[in-house]
Length: 407
Image 1: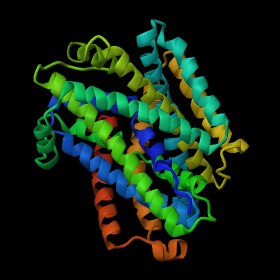
Image 2 (image 1 turned 45 degrees about the vertical axis):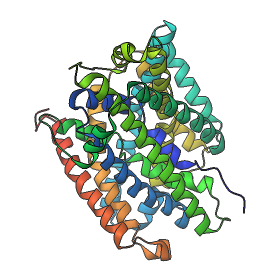
Image 3 (image 1 turned 30 degrees about the vertical axis):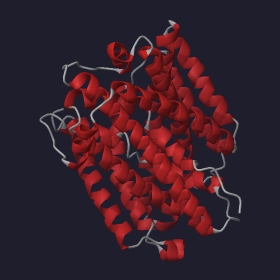
């Protein structure tokens, strides 16, 4: 049988969570707390692997996205309506607010090396995302994302090698977890930028385009698991590289970081005159990949829960991702920061992640849907542990967003 390329839909998941927000969060984590929070990166990647393996298995075996599976599994009309509303508002509407940050991150990177204003580049980035998604072909989107993720990987890993972080400190951060004073919010941010609810919809739908129903299920699942492991591990390595770079370069010097531009400037003494260009290249790739995957995920999620076709070239799916791209581009271009919308999206996503992770766990135990490919004991134990942790973090985040718990 023809051997397929090692990377596939799992790379969409990695591309989705390695965006400008992750670049900034991971760098700030390293600068503020050194290698102490490396364990949080490790937990985030393991949790993502657990959930995304289930999502991929659902798509390949049941030939169903998470949205379609939830519609079939949930019989109570009120609970179904509540869940559908949360998904449409939190993922559809929330991704439009988050898209602004993705586009602006890529635009800032281009402005850094061109001298032009970021607002000018927001239109370019928005158009790039729009044109690629309008192609309506999964293969074209995958090829572009593979190139962008590999570019981003080369940049951030090379930067880490140039800074030369201590391997023993990284090792200690993994296996001797600590929680320094004031670091809990940063831990939440690291987990929240990696384990994201819309990737559960994105992955289950994308694997169906990559591995058709005509392929043997065992072969498709084997390849999908390899793809998931390699892609998400690569994403984890990039996050770790960002934390380690900032920890080695800034922690001991007590240098405060506020945004990606300041990171590039502070790296110049260590990396050289090309630090700004190097980091801007990585930030651009991170912003563009997330600017492509966020609208795609919103479209898959919304179409699935509303019972629409999830084909990329259908009018309704195009309507959803087009709205996300256009709203995000417009907000970035006009310099608007919809704080209320972003806060609402964060609060809804804080509820959605544990809820959807729990729903995924429920679906993955439905023998009528998955037959002999339902979760085993270990998968259920791992999934339950992830649900418990993200539920605690979600409750904390929800109350913090609305001021019940001080920031």
